[in-house]
Image 1 (spheres, rainbow, N blue to C red):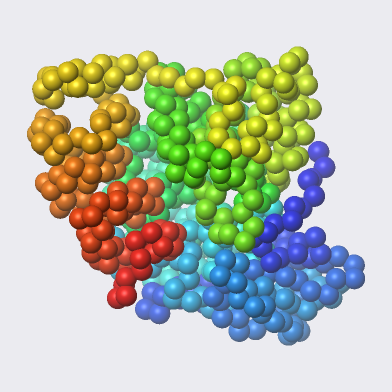
Image 2 (cartoon, rainbow, N blue to C red; image 1 turned 90 degrees about the horizontal axis):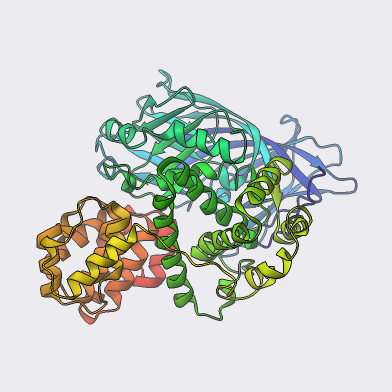
Length: 600
């Protein structure tokens, strides 16, 4: 199938329609003392006739020199005006015959994609750690690039760092330390810039199967390999659903707790938060989610961040199909209900008529991180559930498999996807187009009335326990012996908003919520404790907010603190202490929400 034409991306200064990058040869030296990368980025380029400039995205990069075609000629370049969201355009003078462009540069110590951790911020507390987070538009803070999801390229890299540390990338990776501290990487499949990733730390590897394994700090590795024992079964289940895995290996890297997301689907090497190491494998749906991105996102990518739902809506649907195949329909239904609850909460926060609740967004002039919320994830998933209810699972699965296969290693925007959906699926089922009401999903707020109900039979026991508790049953007498994390979270969500401190104390005595090692349970419990001024939970709350950097957990907890008169000062005190442990993805949100400390 012919490749889709490049979309105009409002979040990139690049002009790939005129001159586009195709392959990157990257050379990096890692300096923990100065918290900088010294880089040499050589791009193979295709320049259209009559074009005299290559445009790249940069942000806070020191550009030292630019040369053309194997360093044989220095090139003229200039940096455009700085934009708070986009950074600066790097404009390089080229010829129609130019085949490669080399940029020598250095990153800034405060580069937004890079988190430099001191030894005490790691699990082992003996060695420093560096990891990147390039999504959405932060790759430009550590590599001069065409930082748009619509532009794909292959890459090779050489990375030099301290000899005792292992370097890893979103590429073919080593499994052992190099005596020299130098590592070489290859990524033969073309990827967009937001999937560029680097991590370097005191890490070890353990295989789970012939094509899967886990990297982690030595103190974390045994727990992690136990938690992810089903990794190969997940990959197999995904392949049975929607076709072959196209990236050779699927490994996980467990990062320190400051990682701002649950996971990041970097090809071949998913980055995951240690907050999913619950001990009972109850939070591994997150891994299924990141694995599903190997098809929806990494294989077929949203053309711009306005089309982000095409990544995440498909991935949530795919994730739950994997979990259903491994653990049964009842298990997957719990995830659907929890996701549905989160979707309604997000709509309430944004406003029922907000344009930000459309699937197709208009984020020009704004940080695309503003669109990385439950609308893209859960409303996108809900559209696919609606399609399933109308056309049947068999037809929908055949459509999705064909979609991934025909558009592999390409980008897709919303308009082209809708045309493809109508042609390849809806036109094959009489009445489907009228039933699904696509425009109300894509370009209208809220949830269309055609959406099917979402329910869980396993949550019936939770509703029964909540009902018994409301009628005076002692917490210790409730039948909770078979509950998973998901039942506990649903139970906590079902407690009254204005519950008393005394009632929380009774629940805490029975179930020890405050001392739970499960981050999902704590994030459901702490807002109740904050609202009721249940002071016994405050030390654990402060410790959690200081230790964990996952934005999904931080934002609601700080919001809960800020909503109470006595909590405002506590929020500011905790944030002043904890901010240094957070990635810029989290602080960019929290600085606005809580207020940037004057001495951070």
